[in-house]
Length: 597
View (cartoon, rainbow, N blue to C red):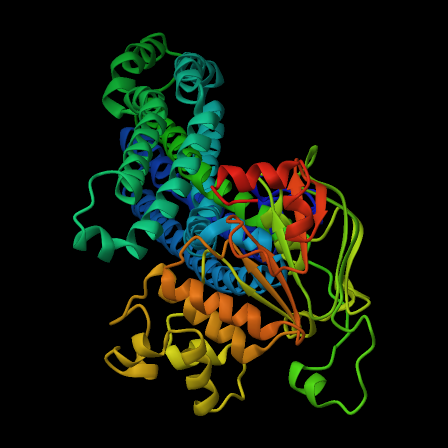
């Protein structure tokens, strides 16, 4: 899972599927032993058949015949009882492991940096939580019992044949091993790469499916062509189908050859002449030849079963590696500092210190992957109660600054302080009571509009909720919903991008955080959303601090400070009038956007 890696989220250990299933390894071992006993017992009826034939041909009476028949019945019973018992043990263990894994993954996701969780995306998270934990079923519930069945019965049967005549046993086995060795080379040639390609295709299909479902209403309403979301889903679906075909076809050739070689009819065709030759030569008795005609014909089936199990386990092992890799990501360390709540800050008798609402970057460097820095030695101060805008060309690192300020990631070097405290000193709840964010991709829970707004302030009254909605220019849209503020989003109501952003703004107004971060604020703007944002920014002047990640330079004249980024470095800083009058990147961007200097 290379996409999980980053220099800020070092893994606590190397991912291992074996470590992942550690809680059920004892159950798997017990299952293997019990299934092995049952598998060994499955050979007893064939041994009894040889004894029965030997007594019959030797005219030793019927007493021993009944004994051999009884032994056959015991062998069959032990085989079926042990196998079902073994499989039952691992199925119960697997159900418990799956439940614990899913809870552990969800808990772990909550402790990871928010930036990493956002980068994973809903499709990848669903795959790991639901699909991968289910895919481990084959490894835990079936592998031990089926492995024992595939190994022990051929081993016991082979030993018995060697006791009867080791020369014939080695001759038959040698011929078969040479043939199967060639077939296995075909089966596993390029198998690992095919599995990896299929895994990548599954991820892309999961992401495209989530994206398609989220936008299905717009696609149908506007009869969009097979491009964009629909095109990405079609491409992902076809890619998944192609990858699946290549995986199954590549391994299927070898499996087909091994399966054909393992068929009793094929084995009998070339084995019978050799067995008959040994009988005619007097090297084995006719009764002993029955063992080779029965046990030997069934032994290769174990190899076919083993190959099928190996093929099925590849998906389980890959799923286990992905799950283990996610769980190996180091949780984000949090402190215990609890800053005063915004309401308490506003009503405090004593005036806050000069740095109470100050955001400061000190020599901050950061990269999403080792050796690929995005920000280089960034230093700036956002004074209390002021507005700072971050501008620059695409890829300059603007969004990354906003993500670091909200502690979606931790810097590789340097530090970020809020109110004089390093962000890493804050408790999780303490930090997010101080920082509010409005991002391009707004996340709304599948609950009522009211509950979505209350995420900003659980103690807000209905009057406060309605006032915040009005200030964010979303009150009229809410009133038009079937159940108003009690309408469940996603079921009977779907908000547009701009409407979702305005609802997010209203939620932030209720939270009234000392620091507000607006990222990609213009992406979904319609006129009303832009108006709402400008009013919110204006209302917060002098009351709390605002950091705007801006792509359009219009409206920045009132900013107290503008930071101009290029190549991950601050190349200019100052007010609009100063930067517009100075030759440099900011002035060039103004001209490109048709804004007079």
